Length: 384
Image 1 (cartoon, rainbow, N blue to C red):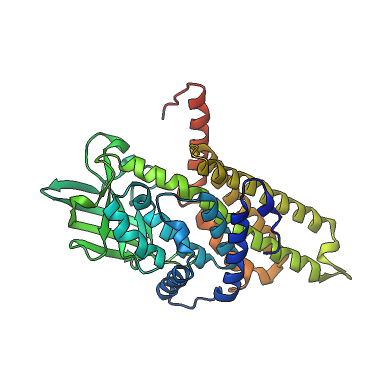
Image 2: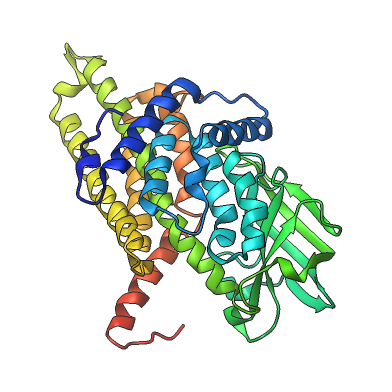
């Protein structure tokens, strides 16, 4: 890692610094950023590698170390967007089991996730219900010792390659978000199918799912009936902060590329670094990265202390993803025409960062969360 001074911040313990340095050395030897055209196979291979090397054990379990997850995502993102994705989805996809699963659930699923032998997925979004979870239409009704699921999910990462999905469906205990439950649905469940594979600008496995009279054992429900929104939000509170960390990884890689370009690019008898415009831009990039990192690791540290971090996680994700987009855009600009050539590091980063400003709550949603938390502190309940 080019800049590791942040690992000495008081948010971290010595073990966190050791973890980040060990992973960086491992990734430099084992992870490359050219995954070929078969993204499904590349993702499966990365999950297997991360599991065999012991990194995935940090993403599962009742006691999740948020700082460790964030450092792992930041480090992997610096090396490869797909490697970061593979790690993150093992955590997000199994996070509800770690937090709310029964002992039988945890014993059955989590060891296989940690070893990279089972691929996990988190299925919350629908065609008409993304950030607005209360608009969910996928429904589950109790039928003896099974639930029957009907409906669709979309934008589901690992869709098509996952071995199991944590699925959220309306069970009707109350209106809005209070009548939703969470279920573990194995990929081979009757009535479950991959309706469509979705291609995006930064390739990774993504799909639309369909449930048609899909029978799921009642024991596969996570948490109490009607508490699915709580399950989803608790899971996202952990991994939303890690999205900020992945953004930091992309931004730091872009900063490294920009510094190398500025130092080597000859222009008008000087180097690009000699121009004050370049120096000002580099200063803005570095300051933005540090500001985002402080917010990110504050949120991770607070959660590891057992504090509620809904506002802090939203601030971290909002700032880190928006800052990373600006840093990467500035780095690409320094490369000129070369920056938009397919396969160049800054071109890949430009495609990788864009989705992070949307998934797990778009920037605009984070703004609403922050404002509502602030207003709630002073006893104001905004309407609409």
